[in-house]
Image (cartoon, rainbow, N blue to C red; front, side, top):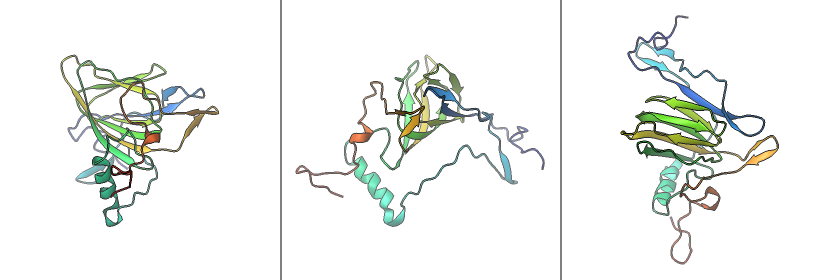
Length: 201
């Protein structure tokens, strides 16, 4: 089989990287040993595919159940970073020179840089610089995001999927928000209630 177009840079598109996080035996965040360069396959003369990551989840799309749930959440209080048993699609803008608090959610997060440059920092001290098109697969690890530019904002799009409790080395790794002002996932029901506390739809 011939080498894919994207590997030979015949598309004219920028080179793309994908970084997957993991934990060492002590629960410290590290980058996995998966190759970081995006490897595409030619699907047909007009399309290439790169499978950045896969996992299993089964959302309910019947009778617009997912849209009703989303509407319910939008009409309630600001949701936490992750939704229990579900996914969140979120766009984040980061100010020039800013760095978030080190934080962790019990979730599987896909982060893609849309504009600017963003540095992914792990609590091991490891870092990766992401440019537009680069992908981070963030697997429940302690991390922070930093915008290196002192003059330009950066933008990322995230998909966060709730995950089962994570244990490393016999220790459960709980959510840590590092001072980020969000509702705790454990306190969020996703159910809208009226003034009397009755559930509404």
